[in-house]
Image 1 (tube, rainbow, N blue to C red):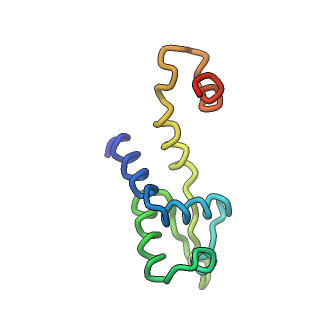
Image 2: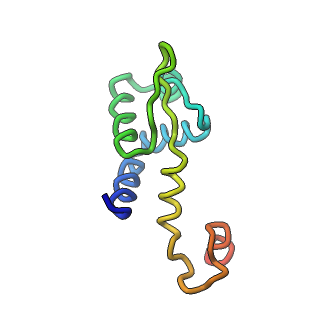
Image 3: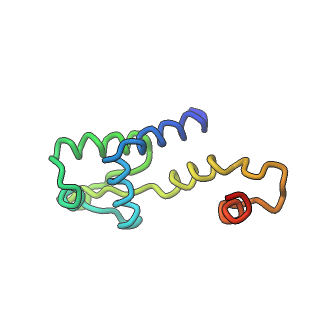
Length: 110
């Protein structure tokens, strides 16, 4: 699969308000992950609906699920998030050597 398609797929999944809310919650909680039950309590949505949205995020590679005893943890994939950001700013300030990072792009371009 090419980088354009992968990025578009991830952004499409994050384009859903509930999935974006779930993903941001997971990012806030960090790399070690969060139990599905905690996500359900925080989001206050039915388990079947949550399962649907988690499955979409997992299919896009934005999260992984890992069993820890009786708990099912959801872990955000920060490398995937970084690859999306990198793809979006890859050609920022094209041709200008000093603009090589998002931080520099924000101060120079935005």
